[in-house]
Image (cartoon, rainbow, N blue to C red; front, top):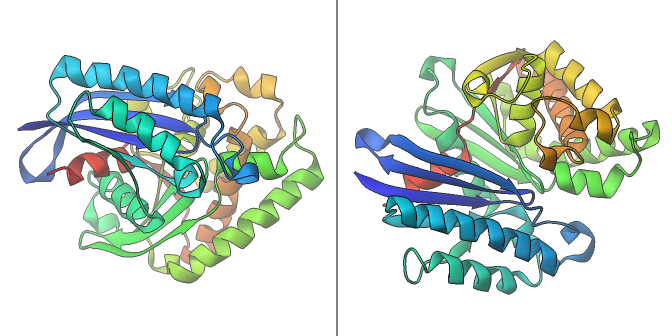
Length: 314
């Protein structure tokens, strides 16, 4: 077995998976970590990273590298997604990541992956534990700056698309009041529908039998829908939430104040101000998947692009 480390640096969070690669392409977890760093702060408006966002990310990555060194990681892959694809000063980010990752593997670099590869890695991580008979699957990875839709089954990915919409991007663009006004919510839903229409044109979701949601918005919605007093990854992983419950949780999250969302037991502090945007994207997705494919439930997976990245390390 080889001990590997996968790092996923997105618009809102930076996450780490340290795992041992086992036979037949499976993983044995050693450690999973997540930090909210908001790397994409303001990128949608300015097109560039702000220095304090890069510094927050550096602090978290430095901590992750210390963990890798402590447990003897032999190989590492770090991918950067939506915000880094869009930032004009992304070389500042790369220089920082190069310095940190080089402490583990000399010459290791962060890499920007395409939306298509992001989608495929998410699919590989998300469906590994599901019964192939439940396929085809449509996997939705709702991030801070983009949302990936992937259709596939046990034979692999058939179609994928990365839509330029996520919880941070939508919040910064449309949701300025606390709580959002009806006009803001309507504008946000219209913006989401426009972005997702392009995704649905590329991904024939009508073929899907099961909707699998990954990443923080989806897992938080599942935890709230299950009335968990605090976040519990074991209870969330592979849980199923009827669409009526999905709609109910999304409506509540959007109508709440910042203070009310912060008081929810399963809510991570770093998601409080953007979960409303994520809830709007989720509710629009739910309605479209119900209409187009007859989907009646959301299956939530704790395994996602991180697992796909780890599995891709040779």
